[in-house]
Length: 205
Image (cartoon, rainbow, N blue to C red; front, side, top):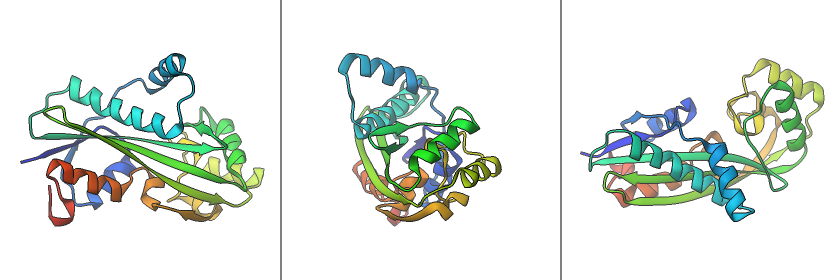
């Protein structure tokens, strides 16, 4: 029987994967994302955000593959979500002031949310892909941004907001997968898992 492993401690990804009907265990990756990207950028120069997210997702999954006990029936899921505004990747804010600054960068604009994902099975077979959703935000005043940051914890969220929380009041609309913005590209992941003989739409695992 296949054994799904989610290489993430994100409660949002855990909930979304559960909603897909999957039975899985969590083994959070301790992979150094920032150090990896800095090194890759030094070697290769500019790396497009889509490629960065896919690379990070693969390395997260690979960390679990190489550092934990798995079987031939294991399938590891690695995911990385990035918020991109004007070609600048907005990571997780360092503090509340940084979060307010990020919301100012998103205010009144359309930005991209990219979720790269990777699958590795127990025999080393890999699969990578990504999804992109456009998010249209209305103008956000500094007073609104400060109130939001003070009343909802955002320091663990790329771009300093969660679409499923109070920030939904700032969003005029989206183009693409909603769940991708939450942190898991549900449709594409479900289709990709079929390559590993896991069909969640038919009970799968």
